[in-house]
Length: 288
Image (cartoon, rainbow, N blue to C red):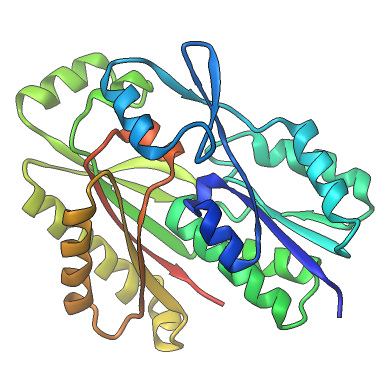
């Protein structure tokens, strides 16, 4: 049986200590603040991130250095036969496309997966890859399964403020101004690696119900056969909003008692850059 290494980045929301427990390798994502580069969970912890963000400084995301990624692949292949590399969705970053191009120099030993996910659904893909490797699947087989199931996932999230969506160019300044006056809280969705508006509400209670209804629609609709096979899980995520996230998790467990609940995590900082703090989110996804 081949020895397979699974590598991902911090866009998965996986913490360094979790990566060590899971047995995967973790690439810290870079962020640029006042022309200085910081690395997630290395020189940029979540508390510091939100402190800087709320101070008004502009935070932008950046691709990881491809030369460093290639050097990591080369090092790991000294002790592993093959690599499965799971970067952020190509729908949200160019880093996946760049990695695919450079992997061609490794004669099939490095398989770059574009499974169109981020954060809690991407984390599930990493766990699936690790379990598939333990079951004897090779890198090509793991990549094929992850990409074939790429679109069998959804994330829904409630944004507390429109400020950061405006800063990132996700909405116009005029729309942000009107939304702020009317106290509108948009519910966004991430499907296929793209961040889009799902609904507009005026309070947290309505937002939570919209997200529950969205999950129900997925679970009773396009994912029904997977639910019947016991291959769908749900999770909750947040940005600096743990107490509400834990409460929301209990509500989802009561609403969907037949669906396995996996975890409550903080959203990756690549998402928090556009949404800001106090986000509440939930997701469902196929599992191996």
